[in-house]
Image 1 (tube, rainbow, N blue to C red):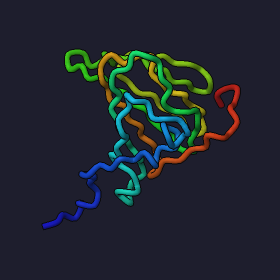
Image 2 (cartoon, rainbow, N blue to C red):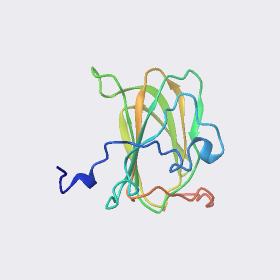
Image 3 (spheres, helix red, strand yellow):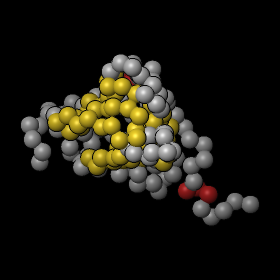
Image 4 (tube, rainbow, N blue to C red):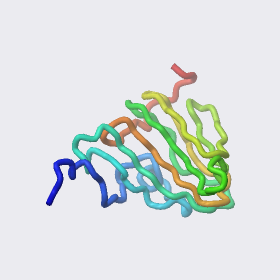
Length: 158
């Protein structure tokens, strides 16, 4: 028996590297060795009614600094999420990562998230060090992922 809402579930997550045009090989740089494949949790390609595109991947140990995502912007809002894997301290990311927003560098060492409004240039995103695996998710408030990495950088937030 099939249910009326079966079409709303994603149970066979697909690798979505081709979706993520600012990361790794799609952006013209090799995917860092410590970054797993990105898996689609939800996207319009899998659930036609979806108004979000959400991926996740595992980031594993790295002792050297590595850049992962190139600078870009979207015409929709986005939330980036990073979660540590220490069940005894949910705030402990076990890593030091960096993220630029409109050219302003932010250093992240705790589990958390950031809201990126539509039209805001963000990244590069990379890892200074990763002592213990953590997960990284991107939630795009659009059914499919797209960006403009070729737009000129702006000098201040608008």
